[in-house]
Length: 226
Image: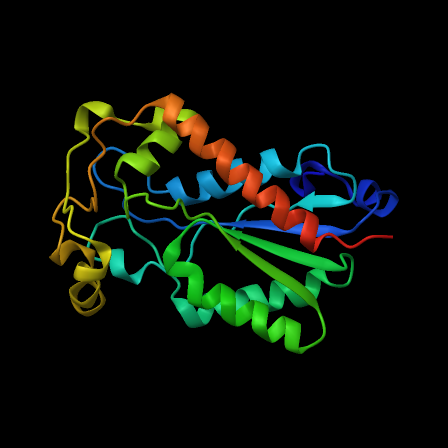
């Protein structure tokens, strides 16, 4: 059930076992990808994994997260970790009136601390709250081949391949101290951490299928049985 297009009577009549909330960000993704890339990925995976599942509702995605590390690029918007954690906690408290369980589907790494803080507090309060993070093992860090392939599969019209260019390809572990201190722009003037070269919609579909399978298993663990 897509909550945005449902009526309250639709929700009232339906089985309610789990509410899924996609989380993204509004931040630079290099010169070739849209700033809402993370939300598009989270929503696409959530829609596929939840399709046809009785008792599972999908809320509209949270479009702005904790993206302070990208603040050096025009257009990026961020509410920070504390505000996002408070928002997700209040959202979870309110959702628990109608849904016995909550699953946050997060596709932006910077949201991680806020997500975990909210889930931990909600669980401490006795609510069933879970988180799932859309990480791709072995994928590059930001706006490289991984995310470019995913976006070619999800929303190809938004990808500007003619403007795609390599960024800093050093390991994230090596770059992290300076990024934390000075932001992404200090280590990558174009905002890319990785190299989008070789990205294809076919690779994107494979990645999307793998992510959907992982989220499906998380949903099966989180859903509340009658």
